Amino acid sequence: MIYYGIEIWDIIFKKLIGSIKLNITKIKNLKKKSSQEFNFKKKISILKSIITDPKLRHSAKYNLMLAYKRRLLEESGVRIINPMSLASFDDLDLQLSRAAYVRGNTTYLEMMCILGLTKKYVTNGKNFLEIGTFDGNLTRNISINLDSNSKIITIDLPEDSDPKNLLDSDNSLIEMDRRKKKKHLGLSNVEQVYGDSTKIDFSRFDFNGAFIDGGHDFETVRLDTINILKNINKPGFIAWHDYAMETDVEEVISSLYYDYDICYVEGTNMVVLELN
Ligand SMILES: C[S@@+](CC[C@H](N)C(=O)[O-])C[C@H]1O[C@@H](n2cnc3c(N)ncnc32)[C@H](O)[C@@H]1O
Image (cartoon, rainbow, N blue to C red; front, side, top):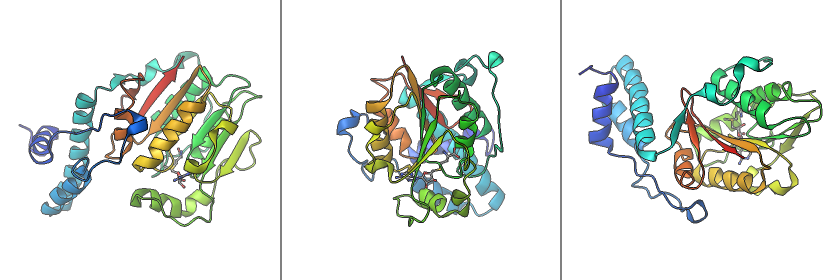
């Protein structure tokens, strides 16, 4: 047994937190989760509060997150794929510009996966749709990799909107000054749409690639997913961010994997669906 390593946290996870009860129902009928289910965050924070040593608490948080991810992938049935299988990266001519990784952004690996899929499905004349612009880090990097007759449409809440999402983690991003300093300003192939994604009619958008990374509460992810699935052109792809991070994204994905071949991309917090 490795003390405070993944094994012991896996055992603690199993004993105290139990198994993951995903609500596997068709997405149309999917109801809000019951308070008994999916309350790992609360249990994890109770566990952390018992551990007073800050270093140990940090390690506990990290290892519990890994244990959660491991168990989720074992129990959800979502297929795991290697990021390199998403595109022929050896032959791709990709550019990066002002790419950064701060809280709220994709990691560099996640960005590369999205760019690889974009090159594959969002060919000249086709478009990409992003829900959740934030500071435009991904928007800018997709924009500069698109062919001349393509564009990226990106949706975010208006810059002066009050944070009133259900989750504190979403609200803190909405409030950040960084969100107002968008990196894609001045790029002619970016269409910035301001509004609440759950209230927008997606039939007005023409797109073959989509990234769902707006509000992370169950209802928002559910509606964004339904609207994208209804309106995306084929062949195309959808990527969801913040999977396996103790968010409601997991629950929405669990309702879809029977009908769609949704895959978890190893080394990321992202699941993808390729539609052919
Ligand atoms: C995690 S950030 C997006 C990060 C960005 N995709 C990137 O890769 O850098 C989430 C963004 O979604 C926006 N957001 C939250 N709820 C939303 C909603 N209901 N409609 C539109 N945007 C929303 C927030 O304002 C925030 O800027």
